[in-house]
Image (cartoon, rainbow, N blue to C red; front, side):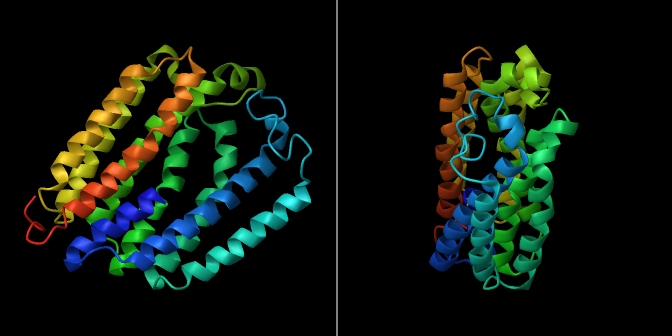
Length: 270
């Protein structure tokens, strides 16, 4: 949802108006549905691995709470409702929305073939930034691509942190992750990813004509990410989860900054 909202706010700058409440609501509902569908699909594909990992063994499918057939039915229902929302967003957004399905379908297999499944997750989770931008403006341009790239780097940081929880179990079952690949250098890797994310989001705002009121929020975003990176430890799974969850606030800070940058008279002067 948050990358979608950010894309909507960024696109609003070219029209010198506030983000559409309808689009924000539509993306909130659509993101909730597609996240649910994506999680269900991921759990279907990963059910054998999940059963062997302590943190995921209690999930509905590996624990036997629901069947694979029921999971597929739930996934289909979420997708049908989401399509109903997507078709209201305009042709460019519709094409982008359909294109995201390939990313979603491939994601669960990435941890089996690359040390960097978090990069693929970044491609997938932040696709909504471009869909939101297209839904609000009817096009894709440099500002949208920069915002998308920023989101990919952001996801690399927070999902590397998230993966710290499973380093030992992942090693036992043969699952790859950026946390395993970086090892004790995870803190520095997360800091590098977050530095790129903060730099690119400022570039996106500049390319999109966002006003200078965005800059205090960009500074707060960078400070928040720096705080996260400074606390990353590979031997503290509980802290890793706490830091991961704090990215809700990080994403809202960027959205709020993009909206603030649209304040009358401020657009186009960053």
